[in-house]
Length: 115
Length: 116
Image 1 (tube, each protein chain N blue to C red):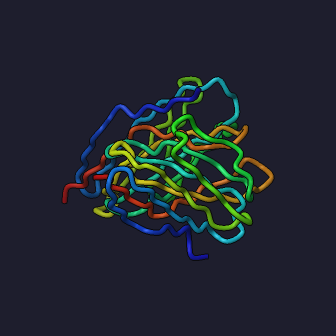
Image 2 (image 1 turned 120 degrees about the horizontal axis):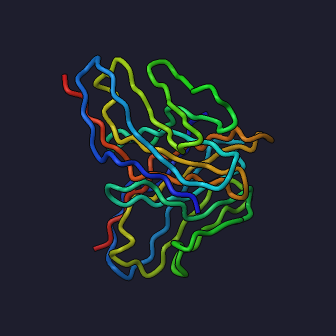
Image 3 (image 1 turned 90 degrees about the vertical axis):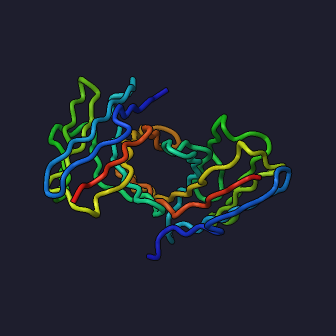
């Protein structure tokens, strides 16, 4: 079974600075997707960025980018120019390509932005 | 596109009572997922529908849980004889089969259940 591990329960960063959230996963599959979701307090989960395992190029979405290391099974999220609105729980998630294609989530990292 | 909606948003019940939650997916999304999220944890998969067919259930889904998706539109999740351990946020997500690998699951706001 696939597992996702986020080893940083909490992180904090100064506004306008850069922060990196870590994620590792375990799988025997060669093709899969990886995601970062953001869950603000009392609000619904929204997709931040996704990465296809077959693509070597790291995904970027505006201030958000990933460092995907397939051999190391590592998938970190970098947030540049942090803004107060980035404060949230961030979840790393894995999705296979077979069957239900359900998401397997990590435990989450709570990100605090200090003004 | 109004997004995934869930009702009710909050539910408080007494142990032993039955509760039912509803999820309305994004229109035309043929896949629907239920997840459960306990405090401070990531969501865990419960069950999955493709159209009206329930194709996979997690071992987390005990016999007290049942889910339906009549006509492949909205879905309901019922918990019978609730227990305090059922207290959690129940999340619904939907996606559309694109024929490739590029499906993204869109989440609803969740139903927070508290069993007293």
